Image 1 (tube, rainbow, N blue to C red):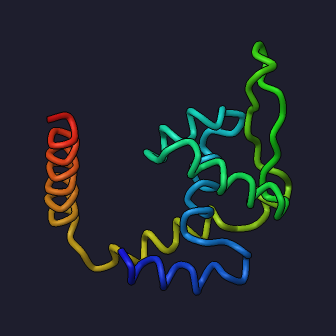
Image 2 (image 1 turned 135 degrees about the vertical axis):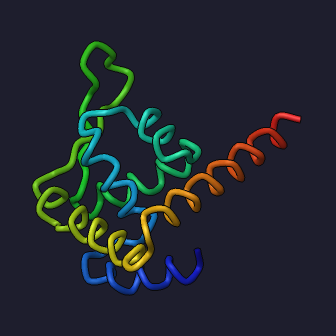
Length: 128
């Protein structure tokens, strides 16, 4: 993961992003208008961690907060024009494709299954 983060950060630096921020933007691109709590859940991170990322993305002009419809106490998150036009979503898709290039689909399915099992085991240990 450290190698991936270093490589990604170096490639995304020109856009002013880190892996964590780019991941938040990419996920938000599929959930535009969601709340911070729902985005944190989708990213499987704590809300305070996401808040710091969203604060930085808002300062950089990638994201904006607007009052959520039906609940003025909550904010909905939206990509700005800069967020949509940054190319980070396409960049992230290309990088994901590059990461698995040359790996047969069957091997990827096995790897995915093994990682899912490890995650389930971690979740079980956390509950014990």
